[in-house]
Length: 398
Image (cartoon, rainbow, N blue to C red; front, side, top):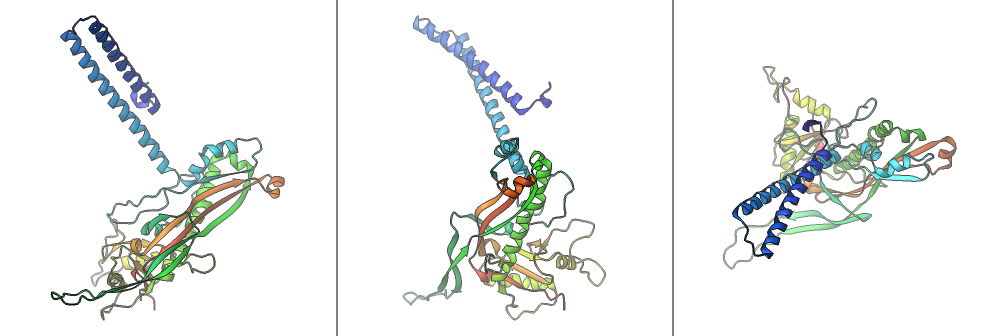
């Protein structure tokens, strides 16, 4: 077996064996030197050289063993990060034991929160929230979820988040003469509560699917987990705040009003003034949210000579306007835009990460040989400064 075909475990075993041999050599030399010292026999220079060589070799072997262990640990981490929600579920040891039962009874639950990456080719861009999916069968069309990636992240063990919402900031700072009265600024807050809300759904399937890992993984990834993420994005953007709905960013946002007596003649101008309006609220904007139709219209804009104003159709167009990453989602209406300092103005608090549960504890399941599969998550959205979120018309559609 060549080195290229050996597994990490086999290489680790060989490295440990080499370390053990060097350890035994050093131990033997030390025991011999100790015995001779007790007899009053001085250690010869040759023996000292051999001892030094053995110690050096032992140190090198220890270093190789530590490096190997680190590589194995990193491989394990990389493997974990690349798993989809469905793969996390079907590879869970508890589920394997549950599914391996001749007649599965009871229920089993697994946390399947996706590990996310905000890295893209363009510095500062917002990456894909949902990991690429590798599932058996046909992959269904899915919306790319990105709004969560714009927001500050947090966790909670409570059913609600109490926080101070910034209401008004009056900045009266000014140069002051020696001994003169200093001006007073005002920062007003109001008490606010963000309730933790539950997003969930379930479906039934034949109990035989417990023994069909690819099919079960596909259902979890393509339907259950994706359904949660889809509704989460809708809630984060447009939740009404009433009943069991989150108060979404658009619901709480400040209406767009061109600041500084400036006027806009194009949608791109409107976006620039929205960014200015956010900046005047003392927070720097970090993103723009648009419907894909509006972004396409902007990218197709041409000058009088017929040349494209933004990007090159034959090249890669980074989704950026006025230096900010653009998030495209159909959760925003056509001819509307949301600009904000999302990471400072609002924060998500996860109460329960996305989980998937399978259960046979139902009379209908028992008599029809079915299993219930449920996906669920709980979260709250705290919006600290509404003025740092600006929403309004682009003026593209009459």
